[in-house]
Image 1 (cartoon, rainbow, N blue to C red):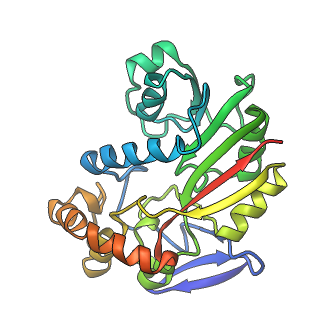
Image 2: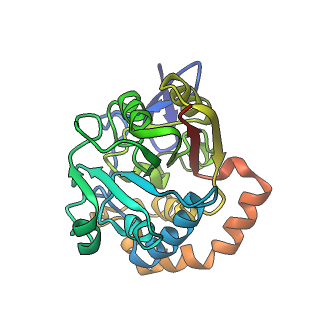
Length: 270
């Protein structure tokens, strides 16, 4: 690991061989957000629908396990599909869980690295923007492997540490606004981690439609680095800019996939 100086005075450690980024808040502070979550309800509903569709792209799993289920909204989608649902969450966001999911799902509180006696034989284990938070990602991936039935699949979404946006926006990159984002995978480091955990048929994709507000939010942080305890997307002006710029963002991502800010890990237990 060696220090990488980003525009704006932020220094982050980068692995020489795989590009994996590890963040120390003392050298790369979040700066503007007090909360771990900086989303916005309107954008989240759209994102939830797109994520559910993406996770079902290869079929309809019968048993589903979510790492970091939050309020259970995505598990509710799978429950309505007819799946049995389960999950683990450290309750980092402190939000109420969907009552139907709470009543019918097998939900545990805690980190997946520390949890025990979790329900196995899952067809799908997934986590949406989880790996960048965990301190022991190897244990997280290995436990996910153990939860799967033979032939079961895993899918994790995580910010792309090798996105060209990191260099473009530097310390203003929106993914750095969350103080609990302590690491950022590259396509290389994510593939290596999955193979080390025992997965096969490993693919790492750059998602076109995830985190569509990143550019507008990052630009707003760069142009106006004022304290924002609730997050930059709490501003109606920034939110409006994010919505208005969506067609242009999608077009740019089609032309230059490297600017896409999210990686998706797809892999299978043999």
